[in-house]
Length: 334
Ligand code: G3I
Image 1 (cartoon, helix red, strand yellow):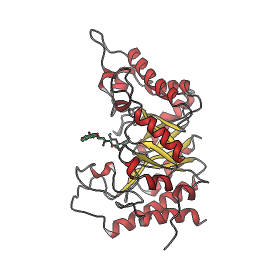
Image 2: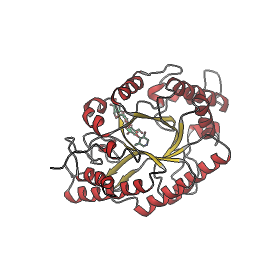
Image 3: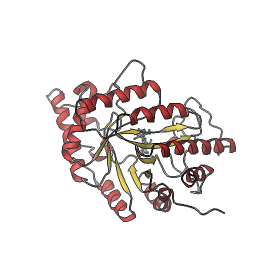
Image 4: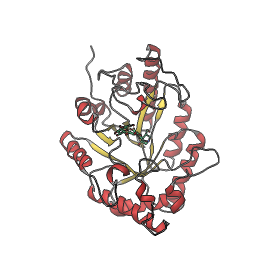
């Protein structure tokens, strides 16, 4: 029987180890959160529709609870997310009665949202995902079509960062995206951020969501992406990591538990990922999992409704998986 080491302690000289939490897991996973993680992200509760469901009616209760929880248990906090095309209240894109929607009004509302949050929680969050998933997945299209883009124009991204920086000049501001290792999308993300730096837009980091699986993306693509982003001289954070047992196109529904082959493959993949993160630890400042244990993950429902998945280092009974030991071994083996 090997001694159960704390993940975050094992990695404390390299980077923070984070978990996304929600109103359910924050209580039910307390012992794992306390022992293994030193950073937290709200999975949903800081998104626009939760925080400001109606104009100027802010709901801070959950985030306030998260802040006091993190102070009690010694976690640092990542803010997720300020400007996104998803989970954003409809009212923000609608004109008041008798008026037309326009760029200035949306910028004003964006500013008020960002300022309110960053000022209220000044000094409490070490990083913020200021803009999330603005790059298109489609070949030949640069930015994703969204009301932000359609109403404000391409510079909505620059404005979001400028407002955030004005509200809290000390906060580390991130652009965060998925499919971040796909070569075409990687180059678009790189170009976006490079252009922002050339325009002196206050951006400090790139978030690699890392919604990966036991086959994809390849290690070569992951390394190339980390290398390319790191060349911009910004911080990198792994922000939403999970390692699905299924490739995206795989619609299989028959499994009630993962096969041994899947668990072994997942352990190998985690080992390779953390080996790489360790190699780039001068750039990578935190690695956050998009959940805590296999008991709860958004992947139980995605992309196949009702299918279970097992993407983390702890199983459905909060016990360590082979993947956990491989990740631990990456720091003890030098
Ligand atoms: O809370 C309601 C509940 O009342 C209702 O009964 C139920 C019925 O579907 O829905 C519940 O809301 C769901 C919510 O998660 C809370 O579980 C929403 O339908 C569902 O859409 C929402 O999904 C979230 C998703 O973002 C939305 O896009 C996932 O939990 C969350 O993990 C996921 O996180 C995103 C990151 O923010 C950005 N990157 C991708 C990542 C994964 O999609």
